[in-house]
Length: 326
Image 1 (cartoon, one colour):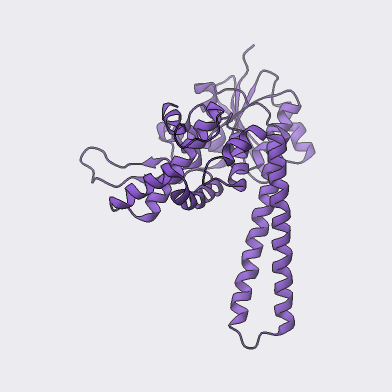
Image 2 (cartoon, rainbow, N blue to C red):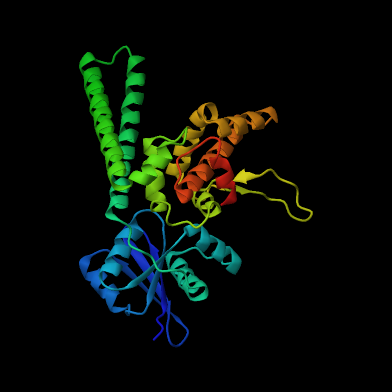
């Protein structure tokens, strides 16, 4: 017996569920993440049904794990694919219920592959990194307060000591967690860690995040998919008699890894031969520095994908040819 495709639109506190019934009309329900609501939700889902949701944020993971633990089928879809599907359908309504319906329709139309439970190691990377990022934001706040306090002649010595202690506390916590993150990645994903860290310009934090968002690079069949997911794919508006425009980076994607790759590109443009050649060539053509660095970030992602898929350590003389073939 073939099951129905159930669309899930997941937010922080609630999630919308939509599916087509026998009368070809949608059934729409809203649930919270409470134990009672989660059990009620299961009553609406058969063993042959397929639950389709977007891989956005971290909230979908809780739901995906709960469903698979209770014997339900789950399909997790790249949000960029859903957005493209919405454009193709020319839908303008943007509500949680409408999104859940569209995700259900996408499932019925495209029959996406089933989701495989990610290792707990991936989740631990995401959790540690999330804490580091929160601490980093707090550290920045206190550093800014200190900078402002230095300019204030009326600011007391005791208050300044409190700020310094908070800066030291956050710095120590971040250093400790970064070491724990690196240790965990090396223990759980030794091959991927070794390969990624061999690439000039990619450091421990970027290595960890790349492994986490790609499920150790198993979630993407080719580099173009990964580049689109991250949001480093150029988008060109150039059609018919329309005014010709410049190519812009599509910013639909994961901002954290984009920022990390951009920072990596600054280093890679100096120490990585292929990245340096690309950067110098674009600068010589008159391209802005930021555009050249984004191109370098794109190149780093291609090199990383190529090395992982070929299971080879980065070699400045060999790796580029392998990357281009993928």
